Amino acid sequence: MNNKIYPIVLKPLILEKPWGEKGKGPDLVPGTDSNLKIGEIWLTADGNQQSTVQNGPLTGMSLRDLRIKWGADLLGKKLGDLKDQPFPLLLKFIHANEYLSVQVHPDDQNALKLEGSGPGKTEAWYILEADSRARLILGLEPGVDRAGLSEALKQGEVEKVLYQLQPRVSEAYYVQAGLLHAIGPGITLFEIQQNVDLTYRFYDWGRVDDQGRPRELHLDKAMRALEVGAEHAEPFSGLSYEKDGVSVTALVAGLYFALERWELKKQWQGQMDPARFDILTVIAGQGQLDSSETDRPISLTPGTTVLLPAALEEYRIIAPQNLVLLRSFVPDLEADIFMPLKDFGFSSTEIQKLGGWRKPNDLSVFS
Image (cartoon, rainbow, N blue to C red; front, top):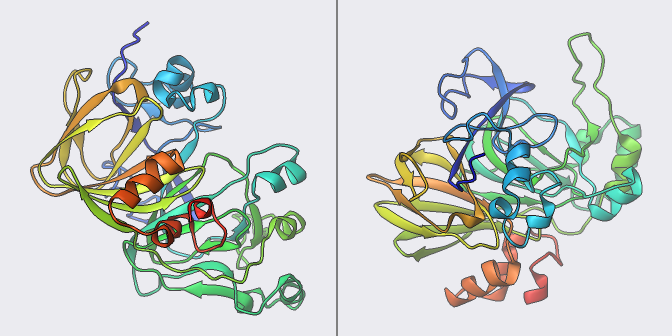
């Protein structure tokens, strides 16, 4: 068996959805059938469906088998004991031509109460495209409480009490567990989430399946998992700084994941932290990624996702023109987020915004 640790290119999974859009796949996955009504492109699938290795001696191996084979060498010293659990992060591109269902995810505690096991599901979005139709649903209108939502449901007026806003490109939204939410039409976004398929569908716009039947709702569990707060969603454009020739924007950060936007213009030498893995996803431009363990340079084009194992040590990115990446990882909030950003001059209040608009959040302990 080949035990060489090297950067892994993951083959994406294409999912058709009733709310998806034709022609939105080839821009991120060349060769995709333009007639497919693509809703989601999964980049790190490790469940009933599996992403697979697309390069090197382990080509064709599932992410599950890779996780078990490499263990802490892949996941890192802090996550190595999770090798028998699904990969910690599920990354997606989402194309919405219609509203997705309005839903809520339970937090860890409610997942245990309602399902008998955890964890729950928190996610975040980074807006890549947004046309004039673009809308996000994030919570309830001001003054609407749980009782008001129940009454709107009885009267068939749910749409009137949903808080909607118009997103713009490059905004980030932290969608904490317990928040009623939906992605609206005219949006392409990148989603980072806990790798848990646990969703309670609350409202589905009267949508029916191919046989004319309404899709299942989970009203009782949704109401029990729902958290109604006084705060309302605010767009966040991140905290930007320059590091070693890379323009970095910290977008979101919490206990379960962190997301950064990187813009490179020349060449950059990366150094892995043996405590954790990194995932780089290209969203614009072209370049190459190389390491001493790579037989040939990896071509970086929009949609390419590279999983960098914790034991990799070093790698190099060459960007002859502008190359824009999203970096996804599981952080140590103090060592990886709070202290570095403080060193770059950001205040505790600014850093706390990475954890979402609800207070307290995961970064409040550092305020």
